[in-house]
Image 1 (cartoon, rainbow, N blue to C red):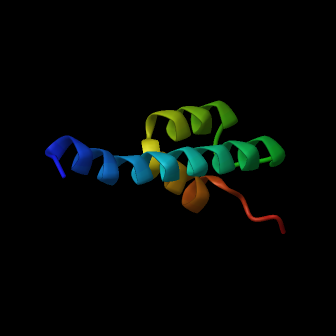
Image 2 (cartoon, rainbow, N blue to C red):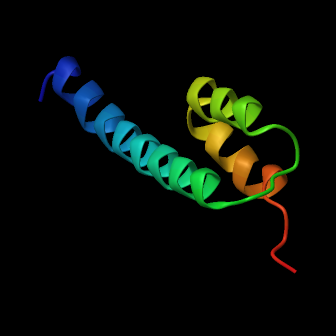
Length: 66
């Protein structure tokens, strides 16, 4: 196994997880009526924050349904 193959084996799962989290975050953001802060701001946080942006949205940006 070469170094290039090892890099692909490590990076590919991280990229897949990132894309899945981003998609779930965007669907949730679209379906919610209210969030903590403007929705456009959360779009940029999710897009530019990579994995952490989606995690921050799920922990801070969502308002409780009650």
